[in-house]
Length: 123
Image 1 (tube, one colour):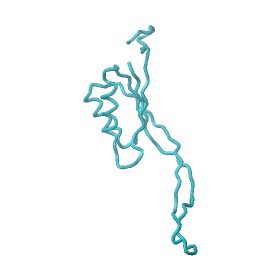
Image 2: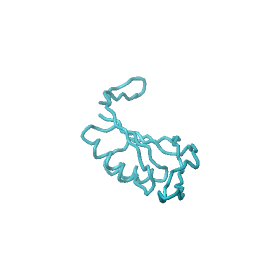
Image 3: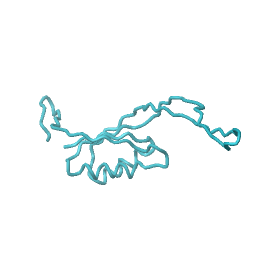
């Protein structure tokens, strides 16, 4: 079994869940999270200097930090489905903005579910 975690933009959540449901992935955990991303703005400044001609230099105009609202999806699937699930999430979550989606994949040794008062090994 493998656990796939994806950080996506909130407005693509329905599309991603619909695509995963089409693959028979029905246990999806979606959590609202905030990501911290630093953004920098640059300006290129040109000036004339003697006979050397035009020269340029990048100036760091502004640096600010932003928290962005995102959705964290978590699914646990058989190893045979993991690559297809990742490809589906990438395709469904793709937008024109960067970065669209960030995905991590890890191995799950056991999945334990609770039924009543007893714990049962699921996988």
